[in-house]
Structure formats: C-alpha cells, structure tokens
Image (cartoon, rainbow, N blue to C red; front, side, top):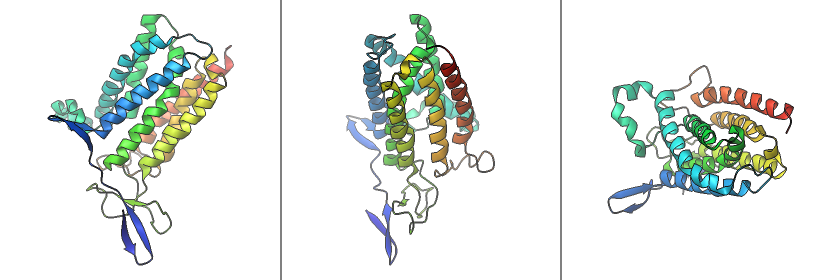
Length: 276
C-alpha cells in the first residue's frame, strides 16, 4: 500500500498488521511471541549442528538440556534489562507491571546478560569451558535477532527517524501514534539485515573455517559485531520517546553497546593470542 505525498511520487504505508497472529480459545498468540519461539528453536537446531564440527567438545544432547536455560535467560534477562535500563522510574512506581511481558518491553542487552548467566551456571554444572558453549550460542544468536526485528516491523514499533521520501524510495509511514504522518526509515528492517543476516553470515563463515577450535574467538567477534551493527542501525532509529538521546546524539542502544564492544575486543585478542 502507498500513500500519495506529492503529485510526483508515492510514499509507502506500513501494512498495519494485526499484532495477534492467531488465537487459541481466549489466548492471543502474538507475532512477537512466535518470533521468540521460532528464534530459540532454530538456534537450538543450529547449535546441535555445530556440535558435530571440530573440536566436538559438546554433544547435541547438551543443547537439548540447555534450551530451557537459554529460554529463561532470554526472557528474564530481557525483561529485567528493559526495566532497569529503560524505565526504572516507571516500574519502581508500578512494580506489578514488570510481570506484564505480553505488552512488550524487552532489552537485547538484558537478554544477553541473562543468557551469559545461564551459560555460566550450565557450564559449571557440566564441567566444561565457558567459551566452549558461548562460542556456539553466539554464532546462533543472530537468528533470533533477525526474527525479533521482523516482529518489531510487523508490530509497527521501534520505527526509524524521519526520512526524505523523495530520495529514499523505501521510506514508510508507520501507524504508531508517536510516528506521526511522516515518512520514516524502516529501521527494524535495517536491524534485521545488519544484526541478523550480516552478522550470521560473518559468524557462519568463521565457524565453517574452524573458528570454534580457537576458544573464545566467535564469542568475541559476536560481541563486537553486534555492538557495531546495533550502533549503526541506531543512527536511523528513532530514540524511545520516553528516553530520547542519553548524551548528545547518543542513544541508549549505542551506550549499552560500547562496553559490549570493549569486552568483545578483549576476548577476541585473548583468543587470538592464546594457543588454540
């Protein structure tokens, strides 16, 4: 669908999808929930496949057991991260709202911390190296990132900054009340392509070339890669209206990505300097 902006060209209109994919009795199943479920299941299958590659320190059954740990880490960490990083004041006054996760409000950086904690607990219980597991998990994470950003687009949320539709053919008008009747970057698609597709391809090539044999390398590159792609996409994404810019021109997503990049750089250098 397109909307006329001037006599000379058309501007795209967001399809305004129904956020509910389908309903079962009185329960609504939303696209965002399906994205989480599909992301976890596809990442699980991919992780099982990677265990068959050298150095084969883990078995497919290990990821059968880890799936529940990862799910809890993503959901609990993602929600608590959103509460603490984005709306601490609001949730301090409305603590019961923390439990209302079906209305949205998840943070990738919080979810990542939750998964890192799950990896720590799981590897300790199995007596295996932390990075042995985190390398495989990191390589699979872009799958969930891509699907999550597509769900953001379907919901018409986390839209981009204003764009000149006369020079940007894919500029789009979003139905969200805060978006206004102006053309914007479809930044959710940018993020799906950068954080999801591009980062997945880079890590896949590394895995196929034996990067899993150098413990920690894939984990470090994933952290740096996500920090760079997220920070780049944030240049086109409209800052959250309740936050705005944290510092002059810097969004919360970019601010949280900076320490992630530094940690990834340290891990990468450590992995390259140590013996494989």
